[in-house]
Image (cartoon, rainbow, N blue to C red; front, side, top):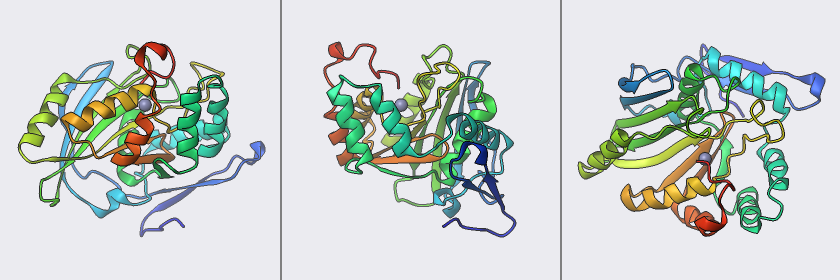
Length: 275
Ligand SMILES: [Zn+2]
C-alpha cells in the first residue's frame, strides 16, 4: 500500500511496451529536508555536505521528494533495466559470479532474507539519492554517494547527516571519502552522538558496462570490510544500501554473517572490491 498524502503526487511510471509491471512511485512535498545543508567542501567532481535538522516522521515513510532529477533517474533505470525487482536483479548478477562460492553464498543469504531486509526506499533515503543524482546524473555515469546518519545521544529530536557525493570517475564508481568527515564523525561520537546507520547507493551500470546490470543492493567485499572497521570505530549498528527504488537494511548481527563471506583480501583482487 502506498500512502496518499494531502497535496501529493502519485506518479505511475508505465512501460507497458516492455511487459514489466507498472511501478507506482509516491512523491510529496512533505518529504523534504526543510533547510539547506552546510557545505563542507565542493568542486566539480565531489561535494560534501552536512545537515543538522530535526527528526521528521516522514523521513522513515515510503515517500519521495518532488524531484525532477530523481524522477528522471527512475524513468531511465526502468526503461533500460526493465525491472527493479531485487530478486531478478540479484539473479542476473549472481550468474556473473559463478566460480566464486563466497559471493554466491552472500547473494543467497540476502535473497533468502537470512541477512538484511530489502524494502522500498524511504523518504530520507530518496532525499539523499535525489541530491546525488541532481549533482551527478546517474543516467549519464554510474556513481555513488554515501551518508552517515547520526542521532543525538538521547534519541531526541536531532539528526546530523554527513553526505558525500561524487562523479564516480576518479573513484572507480565509488563514493568520495572525506577524511574531514570521518574525523568529524569520530568527534561527534565522543560528544555523545550515535551513528544510526551508514547509507550508500549502488548504481545501475547500464552505460559504462553494458553486460553488468548493477543496481543490486548486495554489499560488496569493500563495503563489508568498511563496515567491519566502522563497527569498531563508530559502533556502526546498521548499514543500508539503496538504488533509489529498494533499500537493504542490514543490522549488526546480519553484518557479521555477511562479513563471513568475505574471503582473504589476496584472493579477491578485482572481485567486488568496489565500495
Ligand atoms: Zn557498495
